[in-house]
Image (cartoon, rainbow, N blue to C red; front, side, top):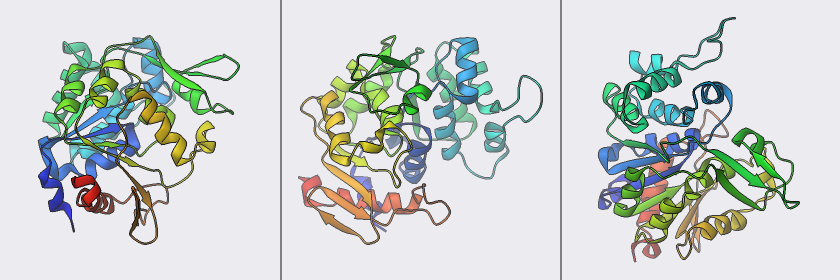
Length: 301
């Protein structure tokens, strides 16, 4: 194991959405408070979407997913946080963790306070920060000029968009920007490119902090092709989109799945697939691969 190599970093920041980001955070959770996750809050589907429609709140689902993957298992807290109602009444298919976060948000001054209370209850050292504490929707712009509003609707597009934006444009969470400014390593992905990785990068102050950061940036590619309009986005195009919003900031290294470990230029291939699910990264393999990359001369320079 090369995990000791990550101890050279004092502040590691990972950016993305629920499932992919949660996987990275849980893989690197041994870093404790030196690790921060910045979570997309534009989801409008499922339990989260229903709560957003009724309560005009931020999207809690991806935050809940990250917190759940960081929680010690098995525990009563983690079981409660992931409990999903199954019945014929209004609670059907609602996730209890989403409802708890919403309730705490209404009791607290800020959504981040609600997240931090859950971190304390579940004994989570890693920081988890919403990209914004104000509700916003992801918008895709098609080549014909048509706007597609909503994360679920963007994922369902048949053609790739030419641009993305947020409506309304909201402020980035101050603590998220501070974490990026202090970071010496930043990780993007894995996850749905348009709807998990891109939304935080669309916030001007957050993307400016990234552009001015001295941190090394690693992009983690997905294991399988996305069943969405990004199916035609090759790796080069996705990196180009990232760098378009980050100005002069470049992705220093890319991590992809491969049957054997080898590095080709700024791309490292590493056996990353979980034995239990073809679409999930193995946590220990992720940690080892990221540690391995941080020891490469190109990243150390």
